[in-house]
Length: 299
Image 1: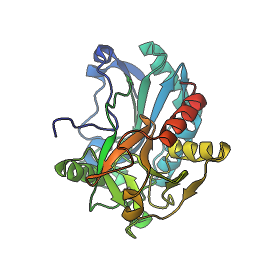
Image 2 (image 1 turned 90 degrees about the vertical axis):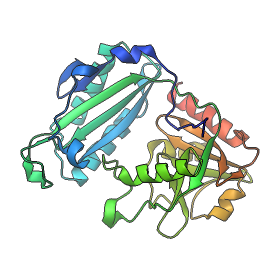
Image 3 (image 1 turned 180 degrees about the vertical axis):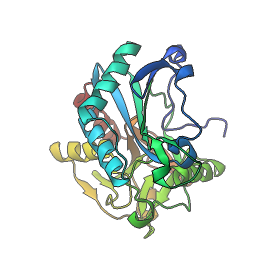
Image 4 (image 1 turned 30 degrees about the horizontal axis):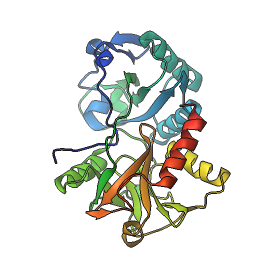
C-alpha cells in the first residue's frame, strides 16, 4: 500500500533528534543511551513496559500505568529495584530535562538486566534490572480511518503467554501485523481462542451498533487503561456499553468501529476485511467519545 497508516503514526518533529533519555538513573543523549547485547530484553524479550502520554503538563493516568507495570513485573518475578514513586519521579525528571509540556509520549521499559552468559535462565541476569525511558515529542497524525484485516494469529490462553501481560515479547503481535500488511491493511484484527473478535495487534477494539458500544469480554486482550476509561465514560454518560462475545458477522454490520490506546486515544476504523464499516469515516459515537476523553485528560 502506498498510503499505509499505523495507529502510532505521528507528525515529524525535529526536536526528537536532540531528546534526552533515562537509563538506569542517568539522563543521556539518545546516542549515548546504549544497552548491552547481553541484556535480557534484547536477547530474550525478557521485560515489561508501559506507554504514557503527556497532556498539558499532566501524564494521563500515570499512577494506573505504574501500578500495571509493577503488577506485570511481579508476574514475571522481576524486581524493578525502585518504588512506584521513584519511577514516577524518573518520568518527571526526564520530562523536565527535555522541557516537555504537552504532546509527548513516554515508553517506560524494565528488563531483567545484563546476563552473564547468552542463555535463557533468569539467574544469569546478574546485573539487573535495566530501566529505560524513551520520551519523544509526539502529536498523533492519522490522516484517515484505519483499515484492518483479520489474521490467523490469536491472542491466546493465559497459560501460554497471558495477553494481559505487557511484555517485551511481542512477536505474536508483530507477526499478526505483518500478515495484515501483506493483506493490504494497516493493522491486524485478532480473534480469541473461541473465534470471537478480540483486539488488534496494537490496540483494543470496539464496535458501535444501534447506539450501543460493544467490546470483547476482556478475557483474552490487554487490560487497556484507555479501554477501561472509554467503558467508564459510556456508563457515566448514559451510553449503553457491553463487554461481550461477538463475531465477525456482528463486526461487518457495525455502524462504527474504533480502537483505543494510550497513543491515539480513540482511532476510527473505516474498513475491515475489505468491507466498509458504516460510512467509512469517523462516526458520531466515536467523535462523542473522543470529546469526552479529551475533557477527561484535559487535552
